[in-house]
Length: 178
Image 1 (cartoon, helix red, strand yellow):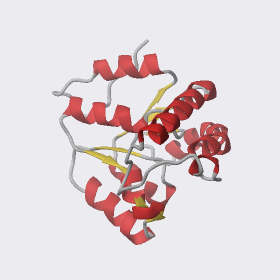
Image 2 (tube, rainbow, N blue to C red; image 1 turned 180 degrees about the horizontal axis):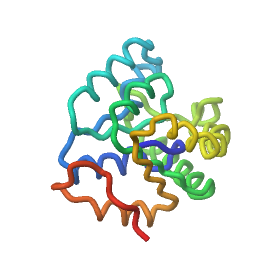
Image 3 (cartoon, one colour; image 1 turned 90 degrees about the vertical axis):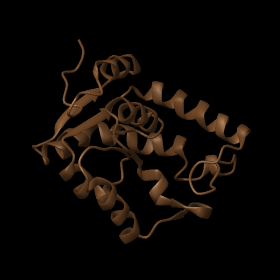
């Protein structure tokens, strides 16, 4: 599961994993150590390697540093490619909800108002990466010809696709709705 920051990767990935009755892995949880420290490269790649070694899993995240592991082992790549304004409002409301509610994210980390203006904050990251990902993802996915690419362009399309999955499905390789 890939997509711009705040597009809903983790939420949809969890729902897919539950529907298919397979484990869910979140790359952010493996990357963000306590105190917002970034996991060492070897540690992060080992986590992705261990999680994706068995058959049947759903993993979300855009990290290039282990793409060669996850994408090579996946059979389907689900891409949330929503319009920038949709993602902007999702990121903004999520950030406000997390800050006000002091919600713990990964390994004791919490978003703060101060953190919301840093260079790697989700709102700023959205503007730095959204259009670049939109341009680059089709070519990157083509480098893994065994993958079925499912490009979902709206929350409604994602909801319809999710409803089409069943626990009996051997993989998420189902036709896109519409």
